[in-house]
Amino acid sequence: YKYATTTDSGGWRFEVAMGLPELETTPGQYKSLGFALFIKDDGKEVARWPDDADQESPKTWGTLSSSYFWGTVDLQPQSLTLSTQRPTTGEDVTLSLAYTNEGSSPISGAQIGFYVDGVHIATVGDARVIEASELYFVSAVWRATAGNHTIRIKLDPMNYIVETREDNNEHSVNIYVKPASLRVRAQEGANVTIDGNTTTVGPSREVTLNVDLGVHVIAAQETLYIGDTRYVFYKWEWDAGESNESAMALSITGDMSIGASYRAEYLVRMRFLDGSGDDVTLPGEVRFTAPNGSSIVLNGNYDVWLQQGTITITNVIWSSVDVKPIDTTYPIQGPRTLTLNCRIYALTVEVGDGLSLPVAGANVTLVLPNTTRVWLMTDSDGKAHFAQIPAGRLGGSVSYLGFITPMAERDLAQDTNIKLSLALSLSTIVFVAS
Picture: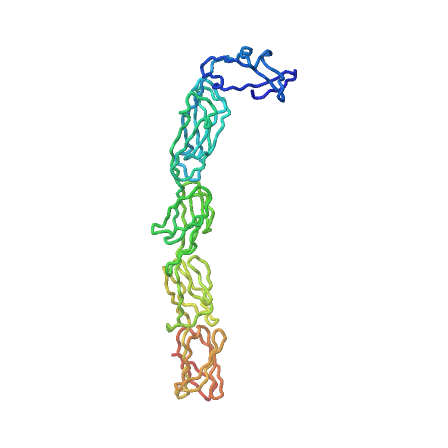
């Protein structure tokens, strides 16, 4: 017996559990068995049944017999299905088993074991009474891993239930789990990184990567340089949205396609010439409107990356004077050297006397548009050659033999040669432009 306890009336309550093998009987048989019960408490016998039972004399025992027909139990799987027939790596797959009791007697306490490739993943206890010939369903969840797998279930895996057949308790199915396909479109030559693993995009401008379901960190190369052309990351685009961040967390729930957009930019090198086509010293500042509409200011370095389109020069500040070219718009179709013919000119002042003879040694001083002053002495030909003078309003004076005579102002808008006739007896200078 399992145990015995006293009752409120001073008697004894006991529970007896015997299996069919102990009764030496099989399902479907009637059977009787001699039976006696002896109860001891701390080694001292306190009760017995029957009252006159003698442990050494079976003739004094009572009789235990079956009072009903012993039924049969035969658990059988009927089908094993998956929530999807094309699972993806990382997907939670529900494994559903349908099973029956093909015996004649109900049973309770059935257990079902679920296995993947021989590895136990779950045991489900079915607390219901499993009636004969009824269909019952149980399920377990498996997180799919990549590759080919055999999924197997086993009814009564611990063999707790005595069945008429023990060879029909298993069922299995084979399944292939594919990784999620992530197709990434990007600029040829750019690097695409998934969770730290980098792939370079080829001529097809796309790569296909195998990934698990879940959240992944994807990053595109921000800038790709190919000679004097570069490609700058612009944004990610996919069916569910877009992002301007080159690196981001991406939730992958199945096969997916995503594209990284890039904008081409070209290296433009600015060259500055004067009105004669000669190189001038670099300006202090250049301002222009880029093809994308943004205003750009350059100081010192005049190599700049620009998108395709048209730029408009706003200012070229040279010697504190705006000498921007007359033509201010320039097309950008690719890498190029942008030559800016600035409004910087050569000025020659030729000084002669009243007899048209050259006056050497005269001091010619010019007041430039930026109010700075420059001066030169006339040579033996009576000429003072001023190079690279910014366009604008000019003034000045000529000093000779102690006489300082102001010059009338004039606008400098091209290379200019000025002849001056100096009347030494007069304090005036007459400009004769040629």
